[in-house]
Image (cartoon, rainbow, N blue to C red; front, side):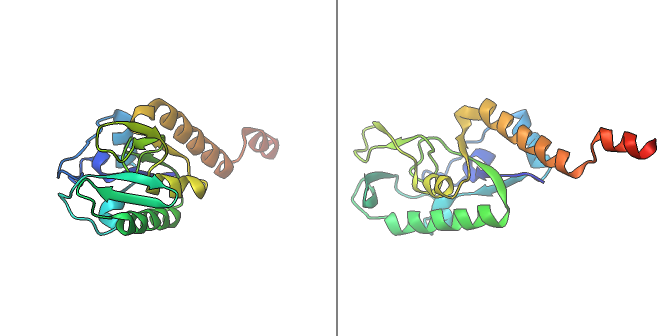
Length: 174
């Protein structure tokens, strides 16, 4: 069965820094959940950060530095969360991930620039980056159509490998 790693906040878990969720109500996501395809994770909680917690942004990518607005370095927790997220993805052999856009952990295309002024920079969050570097495609909630097409193609390919082709059945019956 093709499984999808998904940010827990998108599934309605109250794990955001402010104790809220980012629940994404989408019929396909709900179907995948009923089919047991979704593997929810929150990299920041997996890394040891509590809920609620101070918001954090990426101040530097090389070397990586993630801190709160008050200057508390939370890089170790973010890195631990990214490593744990990758381990969970590998254990469940996920085909891809649906992660929260713009999160310092989960953003797949852009994250906040570390100045806490709402400015974005083109870069992935640490957990998304870890997944991408290990060959796991990462989508965000604004890319649902692309994600659905990708997953449905994966499911179809997987099912076609396990079913005999109609041509072989015809030959066997003749």
